[in-house]
Image (tube, one colour):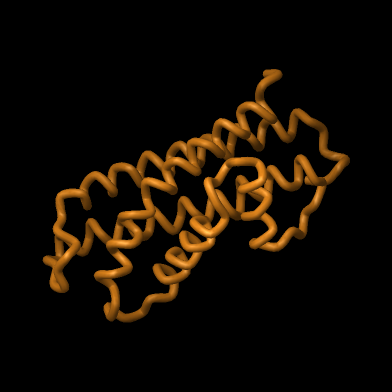
Length: 158
C-alpha cells in the first residue's frame, strides 16, 4: 500500500479491517462474558473453565494482533506513507492519535499476548488469566476507538 494505490483501495481495505475488528471483538466479548462467571482467584480449574479461559486468552491475543499488525499499520501507511515502522513506533503513533489511552497499557497488552503465544507451561497461568481478563475492557475501548478513527479518517466521504 504505497503512494500509487488509489483512495478507493484504501476505503475497501478500511472496510475489511473494520469488519475483521468488529467480528473479533464480538467473539472476544462472548468469551469475556463467559469467563466473568469464573473465580479466577484459584489455582485449579475444571476442564470446562480452562476451555473458556483459554478461548478468552486466544481471542484477546488475536484481537490485539489485528489492531497492531493490521489497523495501526494501515493507518501509518495511509497517513505517514511509512511501511516499515517499528512496533513501538506504531504504538506511540496510535497514542498520539488518541486511539489508545496510553502506550504503556498497549505495550503491556502486547506482553500479555506474547505470554499467551509462548506460554508452554501452566505455571503462573492464574496470574496471566487475571491480567488478560482485567485488560480486556481496555482492549474493547481501543478497538472501538480504532474503528471510529478509521471510519472518520478513511470512510467519511463514502
